[in-house]
Image 1 (cartoon, rainbow, N blue to C red):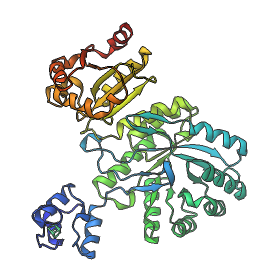
Image 2: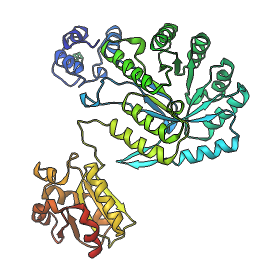
Image 3: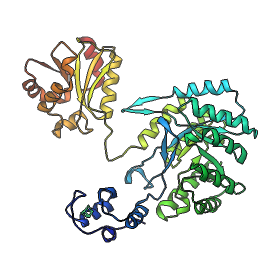
Image 4: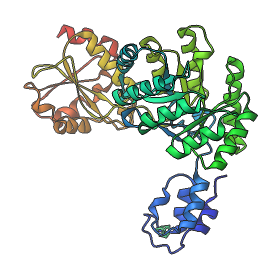
Length: 446
Ligand code: SF4
């Protein structure tokens, strides 16, 4: 249960020294309670108070870090049932299955294909994170050899899937450095798996055949000292699996059920007979509330839409998606290529850059920070004024890249042309089309 500002205030030093950046301890406590301040900003909080405050401010669903390296990520850490209430924080992770009897050459080829599934959008690299190595024959040596291969030769992090203690121990010995998720502790192996996870400081998934069964396992493991747990409620029936996801999320957030306050792992690969159907089911679990989604394979036609869905769901709905301010090269422009300017609203950027690309006319696209507003809104809000745009053109460095002095501004911002000209003496300000759909024709006709 979160503490109120007054409860937090009682735990602070009450010296009003101002070192945290606000005038009083009470103001700091209020900011802390509303999530506007970090506890670390006050250097004088006692260890005891820090422990209490950290406990109180811990998210109801524990964030669990999985993996190492560029594909390391966290799952869990969510605080709301519905994205529009605040935001979702840690995107669903995607895993593709590799069975332990797969020949090495096939695994290498698969990893190469999976590694190529990377897409640049809005300044993010969208890609799957995990390879789920599944034990199919109890051969501990073969399992360990593939775990080592994946851990050492690829960026992918691992889910080690076996209920055999010897198989998991062997793989952890050679691939533990990559912080794999161990899957899964069950009623029959919970002590042994708990010990492996504890000794190696690794995250551990629990699997039961009901939510009650999950609670028994997480309570036992928590008592053993494990904190980083992931839940599999065991159901492979689609309707029941979805109901379980919602029930687990609600129990953690609304009832404060600590035994269910962990991210989940779901298996569309065991709920569908083909990859298309798996993709549909996976899409459902991205929205509600899969922490890790395991697919039988990763292909571009499945991953691209899922990664885009994930991008959309795990962004802050209160903040428009933006692109970094700067110069974007489209189609290898040179010193004579046209220069266009627009706002940093992500959708505007994608549409405009897509139209320029489609025109096959190489161009320089200047993206000016407009706090994520589209052209007309930014202009109306004073975030895309002539002075600002002119100043931006001067300092962004485009003058070092082109020999000409012509700037194309969006048709919807035609009113700023005069002010831009004043700010950029000697430049010709050309008003482009209002609709980006007409941009390709406009560029080609020049
Ligand atoms: Fe109070 Fe700590 Fe802020 Fe000082 S730094 S005013 S002690 S909360």
